[in-house]
Image 1 (cartoon, rainbow, N blue to C red):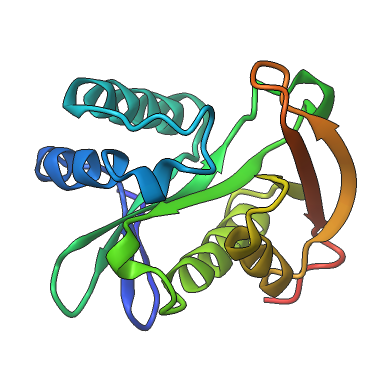
Image 2 (cartoon, rainbow, N blue to C red):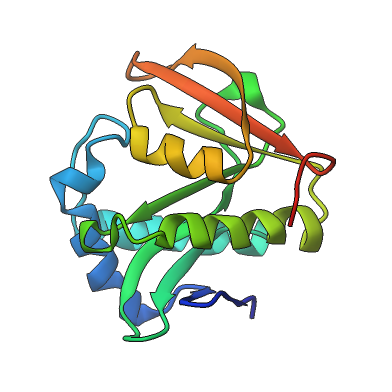
Length: 177
């Protein structure tokens, strides 16, 4: 089982106990504001998503980590890697992304988990390059991206929802662990 420990977090594969807390995160309109069409997601959708995330782990050797706070054992959300199939123009690529519950915002957890995940991608999984895709205006995610050392690569439009997207990238030669 793949696990990463940071000073405050445990990044790990998903368990049955994660379903309800992740569904609560997905049901928060503030969390979902920048994702797809901004719709909240219910328990069934969250269960399907976790199942897909676990399948990606099995198929690709990477995926979205459940992010657990070491101090309390609470599920804060996810950070991880996926193939951004919704945006064919960037393929082949692996993207890093995150989604944390609003009680966990502003405490550096996303940056801490994303840095560990980026290191995992480039050093452990042997990827040469990682991208991040954000919706224009998502300043909180842009801050995490800057902290990761990623640089702007292109601007494009979401193929389904039509809003502007920003693609950032970092490659192994630019990465400083």
